[in-house]
Image 1 (cartoon, rainbow, N blue to C red):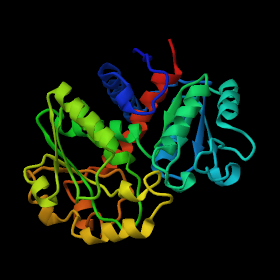
Image 2 (image 1 turned 60 degrees about the vertical axis):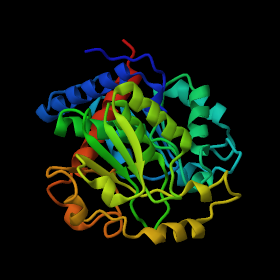
Image 3 (image 1 turned 45 degrees about the vertical axis):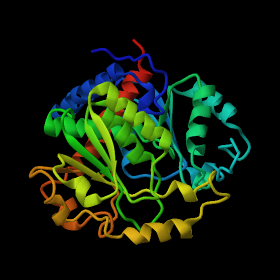
Image 4 (image 1 turned 180 degrees about the horizontal axis):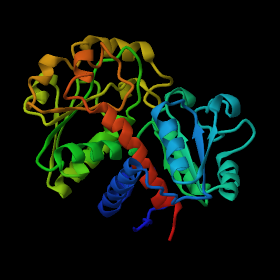
Length: 347
């Protein structure tokens, strides 16, 4: 099996070639089959992964820890509550007394990869700062850096989502895939929907981005999605009506995110009250059985989890026959194992 890619880090899949992404998914399926058959695959024996969590997690932490263990390596969890102080706007200090440049170089002497999760409150909701910190680690580290979700991208989730669709439908090409905003009573980052539109267009899907006006994604990311669609033979469009967007869909991925217009650096600080006021006008953007009926009969309902039940989606849908959310969650394990092998094993 080929176990290398040219890329040094994974910060966003947009920086990987289509060939590298295809190899990642192929290897993920190979490792998934080995896991199913209980065939040992200690491809990273003796390797160490450092996991820096500014934000806590269920799926991300456990899938990475289980994954590196199954590959024969060791995962070391670094708790933000025990190790870090909150990152401040303009700050590049992840430890109380050490800068990114020092931490990255020290960990490079001890292990084989660094994985980082940082968005939201640890960076005072300053959009782009989480991405900046991940890139600072990549600049100074001599070992691969993996983005476990920043405020702009969630590449591991995006690839797990592509793998899930390919398993269920065979291909993304010619499939109508709707990435939609959904209501929530809380503030959530933009990383998942942005990675969705980038990855789904990269693999030739006919992607519709649906959201109320005022809840636009990063225009740079949207322009990348349009370019991806042109290059892959797919399509990309924006719709401001959830019901209309769902009509005839093969896949729906309704997920809440907060409005960029009320986040720094567009504002001095996160204007949560204004953000929630805007979001609360659109409580009807919830995925119900009636909305699922607008789609194709065997439509896939997707969500990265955790989903806000009763706001983003009803129990009837997320626990129903169209839901593949648990398959997505499982595929995080297999995709991340593939990413670790490709980045950490150079032979």
